[in-house]
Image (tube, rainbow, N blue to C red; front, side):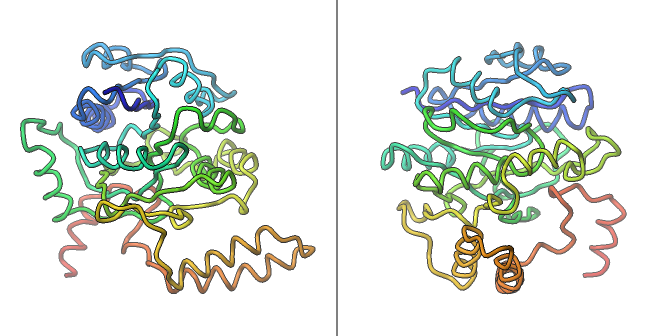
Length: 321
């Protein structure tokens, strides 16, 4: 049965490391079988050749901003127009998916007509082509459990939703901050269930640096990043996986369990909807600090985006243990 279209706009394939992790990701998506089709969108260097090699759909045309960065709404539109499948899943091109991704999608989509599926990712250093012979996913899971690191609630690299959702959105650009936060905010505002699938789905992020951006720095300080934040509506719409109101665990979808962290986050959300002449932000700050103190702490040595550590840093870390 035709179920899902996974689509992505990869970076250029002219850097050997970036090419390797993107090829790994794409091949993992193809391993999901005939229920899934894959679209690659854009005209970046090497993209047409990779699409031809793996015999997958390639859409060249995409609307871009003045800096040449693709618009998210154009990516969504192109995928929607080219695909007849009922479910769409934009996925970052460094993300490895395994069969549990498809299983979770089936379960949620059978229960809800409108929904948003999100989940946390596991970071792993990978710089070689993966072996996709039988048992590849079991081998990868073992590596993740041994050497991987689960990334924080604000690291969001994939979404799954019904094709009729998200037909209108601001002019966000891909790969820059807060459009992903807005996706969760928008779903909650519309009353769609936001289902976290972290306990049921292992998604692997191949750690990388930001060599493709000016100065090799994360995108938060770029003008494109600042514009995305303005378009999203600033802090009021900065939702994360913590704001998912359902969870898939043990084969069942349930309400998120009550915790001090979630209660404090609910207080934050309530205050953000108020207009107390700016006083609400004075109240939000201590609530947020308390929520972060009782919540899960950032992994030791965390760097934005789960960047690969230099070999000497790895050596020092192992010597300190």
